[in-house]
Image 1 (spheres, rainbow, N blue to C red):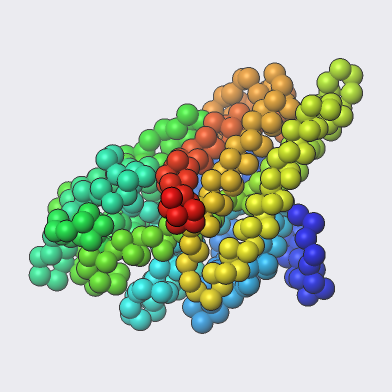
Image 2 (spheres, rainbow, N blue to C red):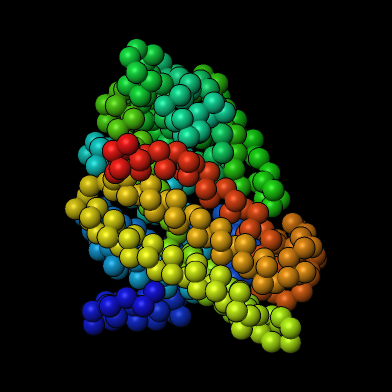
Length: 398
């Protein structure tokens, strides 16, 4: 985005670009660019590179081992890393749990868990959604009953992204049935290796087992793993979700997707001319680009307002809605741009080293799987319909 950056901010952008040129392994950037699936080791390799530089947790204060960047610096970093086809930073420990622990966790929890997130000792996943509690998150039924120095957890979580890689899960659990549903929820940290936990992958429409079901059968969790106060978990959950929804806006991913779309439109032909010269298609690109520019500016305002440590408000719901719609529109236009190359889709071709070669040019290979996988964007993190209700109540006072 062509924003008015200061000389200091331009120098920071140049530093990020230089770092990416030197430290981003080409093997990883090629996999991201071609839409190939990343392994757990791929993510861990990139996390370690960033952590060595001190850039893994841009949203954390320096006192906790973070980069301490302001909103503009985080914007620049996201923009440059996605443009360079760097692997995404897995958000669960860094962008979700980390801020919760820093605001609500005990000093002992902060000293123990935060360094482990940065060092890669723990891979976290999110235990929020259940079969009967998705957007209506207050309906969680997974229980945690106190038994001496432990909680005994029973229930089920679902749509647990990358849970097959995780050794830890932060969970919303019901510790009381008294009062309103929101009043009986607690926030618990659970070791995935504890006896009684079963993980079952769910294969998505693009062929990848990205999400999972997680079952808890009399799992004993130390009471010291309770974050904050018992039955106050709803407050912590809302704080986490506002950070998640702002992150879901995905300005950097949208920028990278738009740049890729323009590149494809210059290469593909329509009526003997580059597709980007087609008036209708060019107008569709322009429309989504204008929306993205407006959303990027709003994203900077919202994140800047949260720089003092306060969670973003209902504005994060606005970003979640608009950001996910924009990314889906870019995915749809990309499928149109590659034309018939988007039709054949062999899931195994996305595995590095697969014998299933791509059909058509390499830029076409990821068009269909990205389109299919990103249909979820407007559902997870609280569906866009629910976000519109939040906006209506909190901002429009309807």
